[in-house]
Amino acid sequence: MYEINLRIDEEKDLYSPFDESCRTLSSDVSDYLSGQYAKKDIGDEIILKIKCGGPVDFERVCGAFQELIREQKVKNANQKRLNIVKQAWLFSIGVVFVAAAILLEGILGSVPVELISIVGSFAVWEATDIWIVENPRTKLAKRTLRKLNSTRIVVEQVNKADADLRSLK
Image 1 (cartoon, helix red, strand yellow):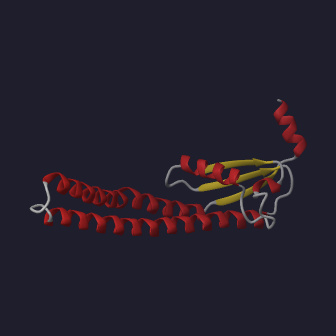
Image 2 (cartoon, rainbow, N blue to C red; image 1 turned 180 degrees about the vertical axis):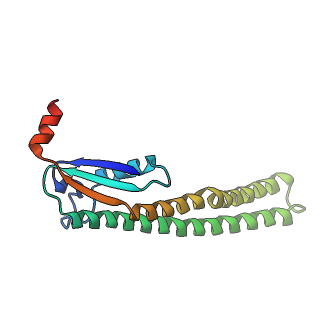
Image 3 (cartoon, one colour; image 1 turned 30 degrees about the vertical axis):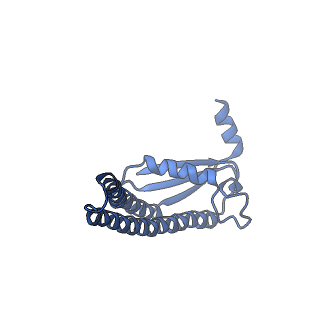
C-alpha cells in the first residue's frame, strides 16, 4: 500500500483559482500528485489522504480527481495517435528516400546518393524509435491511469488549533 498525504489549509487550495466550478485540481496539486505517483511501486494500492483544516466536500474532491484522470487519458490517447501518425510518416519518407538512393545510384555521384540514403535511414530510425521507446511509454501511462482510477481517497479534517500546536513542538 502506498499512501500519499496532502495537507491543505482550506478546500479551495485543492482547486484551480481560474475554475469557479471547482472541478479542476490546481496545477500545484496535480504536480505534487504526479511526483508522488512516480515514487510508488507498480503493484501498490494507492491511498490519497487529504488533511484539511476545514470541511471538505468529498464528492467534489472525487469529481476533480476523476476529471484529472480523464484529462490525462485524453492527453495519453492524443499522444498515441500522434505517435502513430509520426511513425507512419517517418517510415514512409524513409522508405521513399532509401528507394530513391538505390534507384539513383548509377545516375548521381556517390556523395548525393549517400546523403539521400542517410536521410532515409535516419527517418526509418526515428520511426523505429517511436515504436521501441515512445509507444511503450504511452502504454505504461495508460496502465498507470487505470491504477489511479482505483485510488482510494480519504479526507481528514484536522483541527486548526491542533495543527498549530503540532507545528510549535
